[in-house]
Length: 344
Image (cartoon, rainbow, N blue to C red; front, side):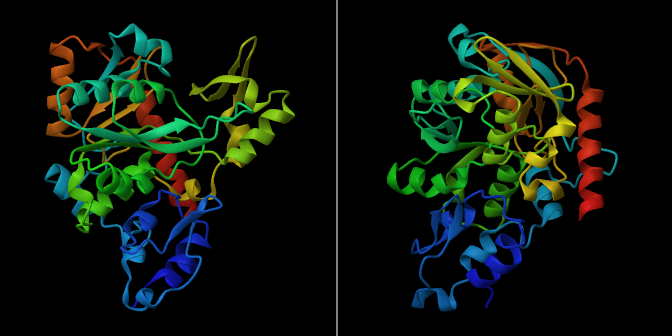
């Protein structure tokens, strides 16, 4: 029986754990806990002897990409499809000034969530918010948002680990939500699609998946130390972004731009073997790269995603135009895939 012991030795201790939270959410008796920013089982229970749920819930143990692509798209990705299967790619921007004031770029993710909530396509979303601490830190944490105000409050990118799938059980069991949207990085998207593929009992509540472009996530402590060495403390930071090969940090008075090559030591270990830049298994994938400042690059991948974006356009929720540089997105995707192949 493959169980927690194997999950710990094969995934967690080897640095392959993406800290998505799927194993904790899947534990039927909640024996797994989130402790010290990682999944742990404080005490082995008798019920664990004949249960391998947590092991099989981890997409790092048995991820069947081809079968999952067939389920989502009806076919597998071709080798020359550098950014995965998609229907169209556009640049987009929210038409809501309140959202734009809070948003990272074009406010598209927030606008999609608000629209789906108002149209009752979803009754909540699991996303990442900045933890409110007295020291003004940028520590991310997962949140179930059930109102427009909560969705807007979580707008903007936060760099660092956020185990958003921890909240699936909270959303379905505690908040009694039946129609949920997940917003996460490619690793979160893969983990969620894996749970749907293996028929995880709470997976039917996930109706929509939004993925975010990702060159590689950052270990929060390493990022904080790296910025401190360059004269910036996390409590001074007002915004962080990545564009054109630079990690940009904005404070009230200054902007610090660090070449991404200098931030590679900040990357979480599991990111080194990830080959997905543009959230290839999402319904819609969104990022900043490839579009001008103030706009978001949007990859519409599924029929469901196409329906939502078309409604957003026709009802004036967003403004759209031709994307500025699809080639740049493809280059990033190819580069990440090649790096992963070398490291695996």
